[in-house]
Image 1 (tube, rainbow, N blue to C red):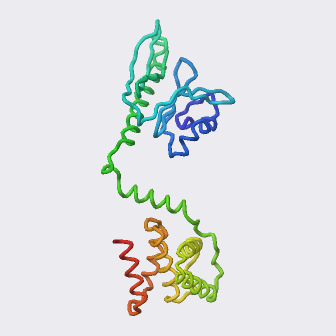
Image 2: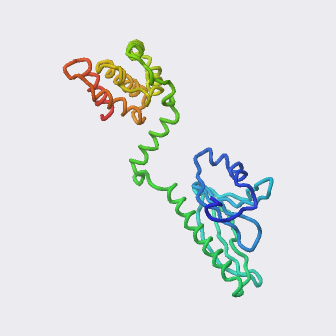
Image 3: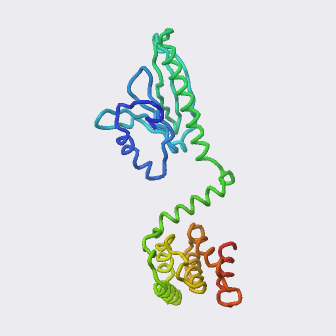
Length: 270
C-alpha cells in the first residue's frame, strides 16, 4: 500500500502487518496509509474494519491508538492554526473518546503551499475512505449482492475442504477406473460420504473420462455429487462440476441413473 501511494514509511511494512496481525486474521484488509506532513513521523493506517495511528522505526511499529469503525460515532476534518503554523487534523469520535491525527503542521507561506495541499487532500481522502468502510460494515443484509455472497461461500468451502488434484490419474488404465467405481460404490453403501467426496475432489481436475465407459463415469461423478450434498457442500464449486459430468452421460432409460440424477437436481436446485 505504501509503495502504491509512493510514500516511504520510517518502518518496515512487514512490521506493520505483524502489529495488526490479529485484525488481519479476522479478515481485515488494508485500505490506505497516509503520512503526516511536516510534523512528527506518524502514519494513519485505514483498514476495512478500523483506523490506526502508528509510528515506528527500523525495529518496531507502535500502534498509538485504534478506532474500530463499528464503534465510530463521528468523523470530521478540520483546518486550524497552531501558533504561526497551519494545521490539518482528522478527528474520530467513538465511545465517548476523541482521537486526532495531524495530517499537516506546515508554514502558511507561499513556499509551503504544496505540503499544505497534500495534507488537506490526504485528510479529506482518509475521511471519505473511513466513512465508506464504516458504511460497508453497517450495510443491511438486503444490500449485499447475493452473487458475491454465493461466490465467497463457495471459495470458503473450497479452501476449507479437501484440496483438488492431489491424486494423479494421467496414466490410469481402464482397470484403474473400474477400481475407482467399485471403491466408490462400496463406500456409498456404507454411507462413507466424506471419503467419497474427499477422494473425488482430490482427483479433480486431473480425472477425465478417457478410459471410462459412460456408465462407470456417471456413477463416479453422481455418487460424488450426492455425497457432497449429504455433507452440505451445495455451494462448493466442484459439486456442480461433478453433477454436470454425470448429467452429460446419464442414461435416462436406466431407472437407477435417472433417479440419481433427479435426486441431484432436486437437492441442488430445491
